[in-house]
Amino acid sequence: MLLLVHGRSGGVVPDELWHLAQQLAERRQAPVLVHPLTAGMPNQLRDGAGMPLDAALPLTLAPLMLLPGAHVRSDLPRIVEQLRAIRPGAQLRRLPFVGAWPQWIAALREEGQELGLPGEVSPEPPLLLHHPLEGPLARRYLGTLTARSGFRCRATPYSAEHLAELRLTLHAPALPLALAANRLTDELMAVVGAPLLQRPRFRDCLLQVLEAQP
Image 1 (tube, rainbow, N blue to C red):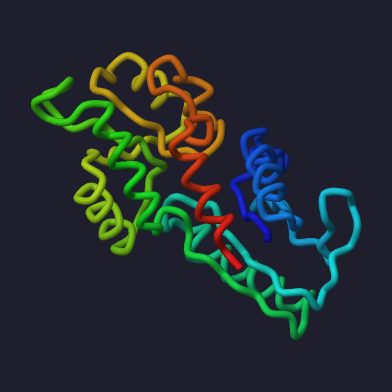
Image 2: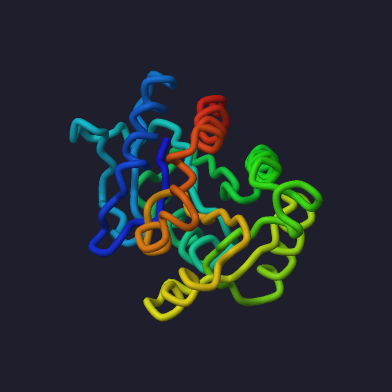
């Protein structure tokens, strides 16, 4: 299995994602590779010990993306083509991006209920802070996410100016829509809490779904 993830500057993979891959490999008893979007696809895939993978073996590609942004719409098809080029004739199974999983939406809904829905802790639904998206597909997705999760989606640019303003103005309960540590959670951990993979509900959701794949 190949986990396609958001890398940080310089192609660094956050620790949460390495830990997820290690747990998943132990459960599946099979190699689990991690590839950041910020790095180019190598000519040959290698396992965690650096050994080349048999190019004829089937491969499952799991894009660990939470939104249907440019990475899902543009980068993912390009990476699929690259994988097929370096593994000609091998079976390639591609999973939907995580944000489209019913199990993931259910986990968000449960988290939102604990943060506080109307009439409970807060007079308004909690906020789901997400990277800004553009286009009709994004608007449809965010509308569906709002309806199914119980959150109010709020676009949150990661610039220093916007994060500083958010630190001063955010009063409602909020959840960062980020699997692993990023600029939002780095700057506003005390306000929005830990990234999602540091929360058992979301880590368990990913492990259960990915472990069950062929």
